[in-house]
Length: 101
Image (cartoon, rainbow, N blue to C red):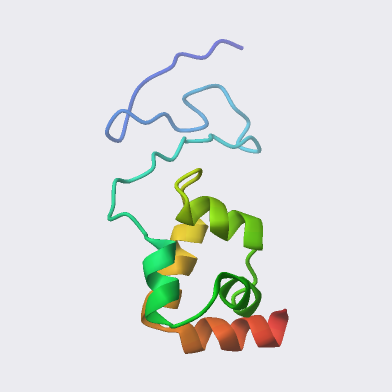
């Protein structure tokens, strides 16, 4: 059987256009959207917490928190969302950590 590949729907291929049976998945890479930087130190100090207390309260590794604060690493993806949530609703995150640990 021969397949021809056609581009449809804004340049996207359907599984059938690519000769797939429909059971395979087409994986589209996700590009990181530029956004506001998240400053873990600022969030922590606004909450009046030490590094160990902050890490423990929100289920973070102390070494990771220190790396963020000292600029050796940057929080990305879900971790950025977690830190933004801590900044705006720390009570919700504390409740989730307490419930699910």
